[in-house]
Amino acid sequence: MKKQRPPLEWEKGELWILDQRKLPAREVWIRARSVETVAKAIESLAVRGAPLIGIAAAYGVALAAKEKGAAESILNAIERLRHTRRTGYNLFHALDCMREVVQRRRGKLAEHTLVEARRIHATESARCQTMSHHGAGLMEEGEQVLTYCNTGTLATGGIGTALGVIRTGFLEKKVSHVFVCETRPLTQGARLTLWELVQSGIPCTLICDNMVAALMATGEVQRVFVGADRIARNGDTANKIGTYMLALLAAYYEIPFHIVAPSTTIDASIKDGSEMEIEERDSKELTRSIPGLAKLQGYDVWNPAFDITPAGLIHSFVTEYGIEEPPFLESD
Image (cartoon, rainbow, N blue to C red; front, side):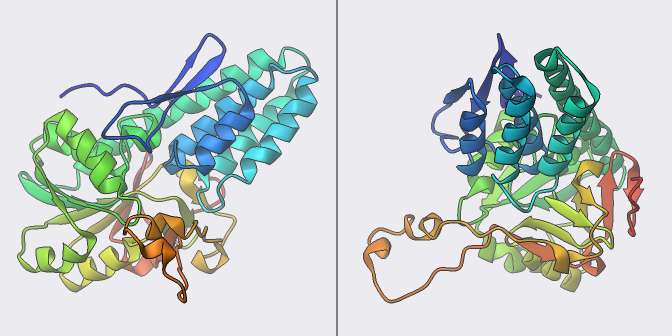
């Protein structure tokens, strides 16, 4: 299996970000020398995926620490980055870790923040590796699985969450084929997940999101693995819009539906999904894909980036600690 280059690389005091908006047509890298460049990359989805956003934000803080008046620059950077995305929890977890560095340390903040950013990156990568083995253990030999959005190296900085489980399952002959949902409106499944699977040599089939029910009715899908952006204490899970629909269909066809996410995605401070803020994106993400639609007048667009899947529809949660069930406690 071909090893994929990490989507974030720190080199000589700069952060290089793989621009995921350009994939799979072109491999373009953004050279980030300031926190503002990192913030804009997160906001524009050049860098995406809950764990990877947290990692990128940590490196953004490390860039700010190189500026004059490092302590103040860091606090300003943290505040700027906190407002880039609203739903995914890994961002806030990473920024809290970076804030603690400023509170604990005196002097050499550039050095200490970079060490912490690298620790966050390495830890998230290790979590992915551990989760992949836990998740693969759920499967029997030769299963055909379905996944949604993108949860691989491009979203995590490691082997992946749900896609990491699938990769490991393939190596262990547990996965024989992967069905990939296109994932409207930004087609992360078609553009990114399919690209990662093809690079890894894993047999896969692309489907439109509205084909899922028809596919499940054939009996060809034995299991569903998806990632998460935020998980409440009771297990309610925010993930890419359309995940709730998949969970409902999986329940109807009695197909196990699994969430794969690190503990840094669990926000045990909120009791359930009703307390989650769901980010809404620009209407152009929908209208620009159809020629002439943007010029049409007299209609509205609703474009939530995420939906919430109730815990009762989730068969199990795969974290670095193993196969878990809610409620999730603060100490997790």
